Figure (cartoon, one colour):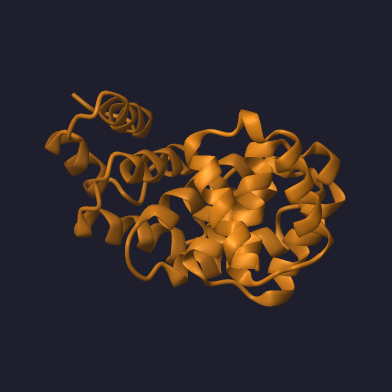
Amino acid sequence: MVKTSLQAAEAIHFAYRNTLAIPLEVLGFVKNNIRTHNPDHLSAMIYYSALAGCFDNDLWGLYEMQIARTNICKIMGLMSLLKTCEGFALRPGDNFEVFDRVQGVLDEKIDLEMCGVKELASFVHCFTVVDHVTKPFFDKLIDKVYDLRKDLTSDVAVKVLWSLSVCGYKDHLTRFCIKVIEENRNHLSPCENRHFRWAMSNLR
């Protein structure tokens, strides 16, 4: 019996990890209590629902309402905000309202100086996937990644390079990412290798 938002988040995570369908009881609890969930637990529900491939329209409509039309993002921690972005980036369809709200919170509330390069790269990737971000804000994210470029690992560099190639960026960060990747090419996974090749072909 699910009685708390933490238990619901854990149940959704368990379903994802074990490739099971999310129990109807859990989905019902999430929907019926959507306005009272702990913000960080809600972000976990969103993230693992997406990874589990559960895109129930009613469920995601409620997720979207909470994120886009309330102030819940403003009281989420940085990692919870990121997991919310990553979950919605996996969801098919128009998620523009959500990313408008997340961009606003990141721009106004979150000190990007506190973000590591991995987190910044993930935000860059999410905004690229949904193709909905203002250029000044995206440029600011890219500049922050460049400031931390010496912390780039090959897997994170692939993610950044893919995003830059989609957006048509050919600059100092692009060159640095390519250098990091080529120096560590043997450590890339097959998926990362595919993304690297795709990015390079797109940049030509």
